Image (cartoon, rainbow, N blue to C red; front, side):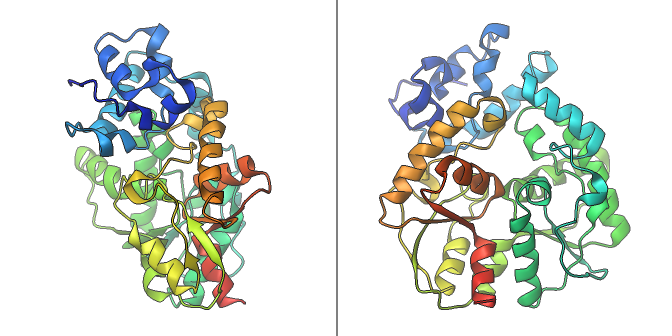
Length: 348
């Protein structure tokens, strides 16, 4: 892969924080053919947000390149980094990177569900850390007339955090755990509120299915695709929206969340950088887990941009984004998941 000195590396959120050529997209490409243990670490100072690919003047497929390079580092035993290794060990043991007990995975569910062809796949963060998001998503789907089931102890991490950090082996392992559970339950449609899960199940799982000899005929949706058609209300306040990287740049879902927000009666005020040019929150790609200070600095910049719109209400549609904004913002900005906004209209 060849790179030119185009001057666009300064859009990289990590480079904007570190100011080091070794963490810029161009710098990593230059050293990519001769990586050793001294510089392998810098390949993980990246949230794999994909903004570099959007602005690249020679259209390099950089998102795929970063993930492939991380796979190579893992195969050469130059990865995983210490925290990523710890999360890997916990997930092989507990089927989630938080060490949560599997029998408590659906403790957030507040009403009974029946067997259904449609599955709500909450994901690990909503199940164990941001249960408000899982509760709101499930409640909104139910009140909007969507019948679904939840697998609880038979739901396993989708594998996204590991695939983004080059650990394809555990990704395959989790794929097989999930697809066997879905087939056993008679699932045909999967709805998730996590963009990482949405990307992984939509893009990575069909590839694993081909490699491992499984049939993959599931229809996969992010909740914003449903809310954009069914949500309605008259909330009447002003808010801005943050595009999650996995939902926006990686999967092309930009208008559905905005349509849902407007249908809820909210005046949407855009940040200067939005849609494919939106600044990453700093939480994804294994960045926050291993390099928390960099992640927080990136998040601070995005929060300042949100506040500059003249509203202190930030809506997103990703548990990682909500987690990072809430903890970094520390009360300076009100952060809501899209599902929570939809619930506001259902239970005013």
